[in-house]
Image 1 (spheres, rainbow over the protein chains, first blue to last red):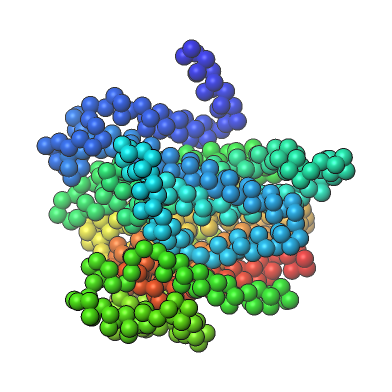
Image 2 (image 1 turned 90 degrees about the vertical axis):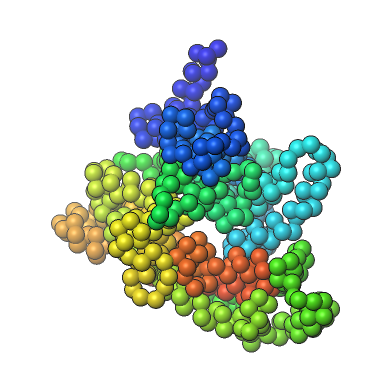
Length: 304
Length: 305
C-alpha cells in the first residue's frame, strides 16, 4: 500500500525530472500540505489552547515559540496554512469556473456577444478590488451567516470564509477569461472544429467536447498561478483585518499579529519570521511549479 | 487613431458607471455614516445632519444631486471629516501618494529593467541565477512583511533612517523600498522574458552576423523590443502605485490617499468612496491607454495592425 502511494507520488514528479529547483518546489509543496493536514492531530497543543508560557521564544517545548496568549506557533502555522491553502485553492476554483465559462462563450460566439462580454471584463478591471471585497462582505455576510446558522445550527460561523473565497474568486477570473477567449478565437477556426460544425454538432458539444479538452493545458497553468495570487490577496485582506476572523487564522493573520509585536523595546521576531517564511515558501513553490508547467506546455519558452 | 478616440470616449462612460454603481451599492449596504461610534449626540442632531447632507431626500433626488456635482468634478462634502470637501482631502493627500508611487515606480523600473536585461544576456550563468533568485524572493515577500522588517532593521536597530512619518527625503527611502521592491522584482522578470525572446529572433541574429558588438545589439536593437511586456504591465502597476497603498501608508504614518480606500468604506463616507473609485478607474484607463501607446511606439507590428 505504502509502496503504491510512493509510486504515485514519484510519478507526479515526472514533468519536473532533471529540473532540481522545480523538484524541490514540488517536494516543499507536498510536505507543506502534509504538515498542514496531519501535524495538528499529533501536536501536543491544540491550536487554540492557551498556556502560561506567554511569548516563549523557540524552545524544546514550543519549537517555533508561542504568542501573546501562549498558543504554540508551530501548530498555529499548520492550521493557518490549511486555511490559506484552502482559500487559495477554492478561490482559484471559483475563478476557474467563471473565467473559463466566460472566455469560452465570448470567444466562441464572437461578434457583439464577445464585444459586450469583454467590455464587462474591462469595466471590472477598472474597479479597485479591495472596494469590491468590502462591498460584498458587508452586503451578504449577516444574511449568509444567519442562513448557515439555520441549516447547520452546531457548526461555527463560516460565513466569512465562504464569502471570502467567493469574492476572491470573483475578482481573479478576469485574466483567466481573457486567456481562454484568446485561445478559443484561434482554436475555433481550426479544421477539426470546422469539421465538427459541418457535421452538425451543436455549440454545447463543440464547446465542451472539442474546445475545452484543447484548453486544459493552458487552464491548468493559469490555475497554478492563480492559487498563489489568491492566497496573497487573502493575506492582504487578513492583514487589514478584513479577511479571516479569529479564532480562525490564516498565514496573513499570523503575519499581521507578528508585525504588531515588533517594537524597539522587546523583539519577538519569531512571531513574524516563521509565518512570513511559511507564506513566502509556499508562494515560491506554487509559482515555481506553475512556471515549470507553463514551460512544459509552451515549448517556445524552453532553452534552445 | 480612431481606436484611441473611441477609448477616450469610453473613459467618462465607465467613470459614470463606476460612480452610479458605487452610489447605489453603497446605499444598499447595511450601516450608515452616522452609525455606532459615529453616532451624533442626539436624534435631533442626527436629523439635522441628515438634512444638511440631503440624506433625508428620496434616493433618486440624492442621485441627481450627486450626478450634478460629478459632471463638474465636485464630489461634495466628506461625511466623516465634516469640515472638508472630498476634493480638498484628495488635493492634500493625492500628491503625497503620487510622489511615493512615482518614486516606487522609479525603483521598479530603475532596478527591474537593468537587472532583468543583465540576467537575459547571461542566461543560465551565475548573474542570471542570482537575479532570478532575487526576483523570486522579491515576488514572494509582500509589502506587509517587507515593511515591518525594513522599519525594524534600518529604522529601529541601526537607526539610520526615520522609522515613520513624511516630510524630508530621508522619510521617503523606507516606504519607497517597501512599496517598490516587489514591483522591481516583477519588472525584472518581465524584462528578462522579453529580452530572451528578442535575443532569439532573426533580426538579432542578423545584427550579430554582420559583426555588431553585443553592447550595440542590446542598445540599438534588442532593448526596445524587450520592453514590450514591461510596457504592458506598467499601466496597472502605476495605477496601483499612484493611488497609494493602505499597508505602506498605514505602517509609515504617511498622510496619503491609500488609507482612505479602506477607511472611507468602514466609515460609510459615501462621497469619498465614490470619488476614490472614480479616481482609480479613470487613472487605470488613462494609464492603460498610455501603456498601449508606448507599446505602439516600441513595436512596429502593433503600430501597423
